[in-house]
Amino acid sequence: MTDILDVAVIGGGASGLMSAVALKLLNKDLSVAIFEQLPRVGKKLITTGNGRCNITNKNLQPERFHSQNPGFYDYALSTYDNFYIESVFADLGIVFTYEGEKAYPYSLQASSVVDALRFSADQNGVKTFLDSKVTDINSKGGLFEITVSDKLYRAKAVIIAAGLFSGGEKTGSNGSVFNLMKEKGYKTVKTTPAIVQIKTENKITKSLKGIKVNAGVSLYKNGKEIKSDGGEVLFCDYGLSGPPVMQISREIPREKADYKIILDLMPEYSFKNVLDILNFRLSVLRGRKLENFFTGMLNIRVGQQILKLAGKSLAQSVDALTKDDIKTVCSIIKGMEFAVTGTLGFETSQVTAGGLDTRQFDDKTMMSKKDKGLFCVGEILDVDGDCGGFNLSWAWASAICASFGVINFLEGGI
Ligand SMILES: Cc1cc2nc3c(=O)[nH]c(=O)nc-3n(C[C@H](O)[C@H](O)[C@H](O)COP(=O)(O)OP(=O)(O)OC[C@H]3O[C@@H](n4cnc5c(N)ncnc54)[C@H](O)[C@@H]3O)c2cc1C
Image (cartoon, rainbow, N blue to C red):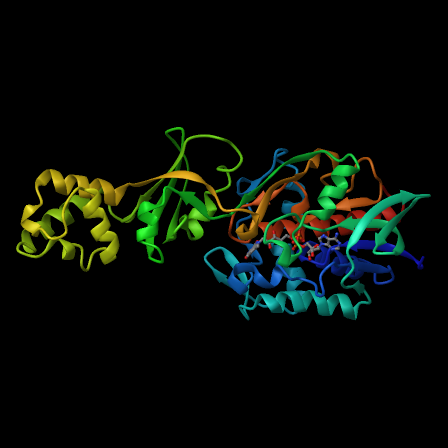
C-alpha cells in the first residue's frame, strides 16, 4: 500500500495524458498518477493521422459525433471547443497548420503531440507508472483501491481513460477496463468497429488491387442512400479502402441490412458531361483498340474493367462501340456498384462505436452517477466521431471536462 493519491488516471493514451496535464495545470499541488499497461504512453496517439496527428477540427458540429444518447457530448465539445483545445496545446508548445478544416501540429509529427503532453506531465510532477496494467478498481471507505499486478494503490478520485478496441492490442486497445466496468454492473452499448475499411464482393476490387481513384462514394441501405463522401478510394483484395470509404462505414456492422456502395468515378462531371466526353472520344479515337479507349481519361486498368463490365471485348476496335454501349459505359462511370459484405475488424479501425452507456454519467463532469469520484473519458464512453480530428477532439474535451469535475469533486463541490 502506498500513499494516497489525489487522482489516479487509468490509461496513458490521448485522454489520459490530457486529463493528467489539465489536472496539474488547474492545481499543481494535486498528486496525480497515470497507470499505463504498455512500456510507453501514447502508443496509439503516435500513429494517428498517418503519423501526423489530426488533433482537432475547425468545425466540431454535433452532427459529426454519434452516441445512443445524442447530446451527451454537447456540453464538453461546446465548452472545450477547438479554440480551447488549440489554446491548451499552444501552451504546451504546439504550433498549428491546417488542411481544410483539419488541424495538425506544424511539425506534422504525431510524436511531437505525445512529447508535448509527456513533457508537461513530467515537468509538473505527474507520476507515470509504465508496464502497469490495472486489473481492478474498487471503492472502499471513501477511497478507490486500484490493483496493479500484486500492488494496491489508493486514490481519492479515478479517471478511467483506457480506450476500447480500435487499433488492436499493440496500441493497448483490448477493452480490459471496459470489461471490468461491465462486470461491475455498468450498462454498455454494442461495440463495433467504425472508420474502417469495407468488405465488398471482390472480383473487381481484387483485379484492381492497389489502384487509387478520386471518386464520390455513396452508401445505400435497403435501396436508400444514407451517406456519401468523396476523395481517394483504394481498391483492395477484400473490397474498398481510403478516407471516404472509412468515413461512411460506421452503420454497416451496427445494423443488418442490404448495403451497397456506389462509386462515381468522375464526380466533378454530370452524367450529361461524361456522355458528351465519351461521344467526342468515340468520334476522334476511331480505329484505336478498345483497350486504349480510356487512355488519358481514367486509370487505364479501371477503364478496361468498365469496358468489360459493359460486355465489350478489349481486342475490338473503338468503332465497335454503339450509342447504347456509350450510355452503359457512362452509367458505370457515374455509378460503379459493389454489394457490401461487411467491414474489417477492430484491429484496423480507427475508433469503436458504442461503449459505456453515457446515461450513467454526468455530461458536465463525466462523473459516474453511481460511483462518486469515478470519471470516464475518451473512447471508452459511447461517443465516437467522424474521421477528421473529431475523435481526438472528444478525447481532449472529455478529459478537460473531467479534470474540472475532479477538482470540484475534491473540493466537495459535487
Ligand atoms: C490508426 C489510427 C489513426 C487515428 N487517427 C486519428 C486522427 O488523426 N484524429 C483523430 O481525431 N482520431 C484519430 N484516431 C482515433 C483516436 O486515436 C482515438 O479516438 C483516441 O486515441 C482515443 O483516446 P483514448 O484516450 O480514449 O484511448 P487510447 O488513446 O486508446 O488510450 C487508452 C490507453 O489506455 C491504456 N490501457 C488500456 N487498458 C489498460 C489497463 N487495464 N491498465 C492500464 N492501462 C490501460 C492503453 O494501453 C492506452 O495507452 C485514430 C485511431 C487509429 C487507430
